[in-house]
Length: 351
Ligand code: CP
Image 1 (cartoon, rainbow, N blue to C red):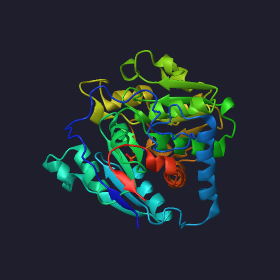
Image 2: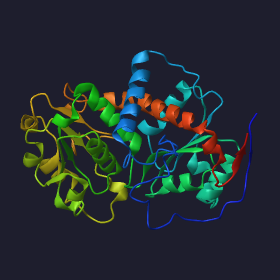
Image 3: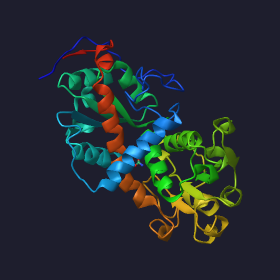
């Protein structure tokens, strides 16, 4: 049995205020394989395609159990609420035969003032191999990865308004099933772009796979300044944003990340930017509707459309399992690398 020797960690009580670097080189090993999954930004097209292909293998096999993560311990560490991401990560890990712990953060020692690093060191002392981390602070997953022991993998399950990489991967996996050629796609991302980690990750992923046009659509108050530098077109009316689009990705108003007023009211937002049946005619006839969830009927989407014939929303949820299985399988393969185990860092694994 492998034993891990812990070494002291610095006792920081809060995250660095500057947030994460734009592109993380922390997530790839010297051979370009995934060591952590922190962001889609900076991933190569072949690597992103490999993740989608691996997910396709899991999704199409019909098998519900693999031994790939047998003997691996995965901890779900969610400092923010979640239904889809947390449950599908758990299902994915269990289908790969991992041992899975869902730490109840509200009942954990973080509520007694334990720092993130002390929580990390404590769980690593229990021989945890993978952490799935969701946190309200941008950069939290990156911070975990920087301080994780060699061979321990960190998966970002959403950090502040920065990134939600597995959401973007499952979105593209879902889209690829319906529209193989991204170079022909015009994608409209509608709603609260300013506070959305999903929008950022989807934009990066769509650009990597060569989408023809990406539009961000919403009121000026909810679209970041200089958003065009991300390679997108800003549209401030729904008529302009949806015109001839192949895909509409709707976003929730991220009220938990808003301080102050960005819109007059949810009703006013719906009148100007809600997707209604009448507005479907603006899209291409075969256009599809996507939403990462949770949805708010009557705010960003007319209730009947949510699970209607154009909607891929529930397929997105289903595909989250295969995509997360693919990512965890790939991380476990790079963890087997001797180079990975020999690297320095907090705590070391003895083999
Ligand atoms: N899409 C998404 O992240 O949903 P949850 O908050 O339910 O995980």
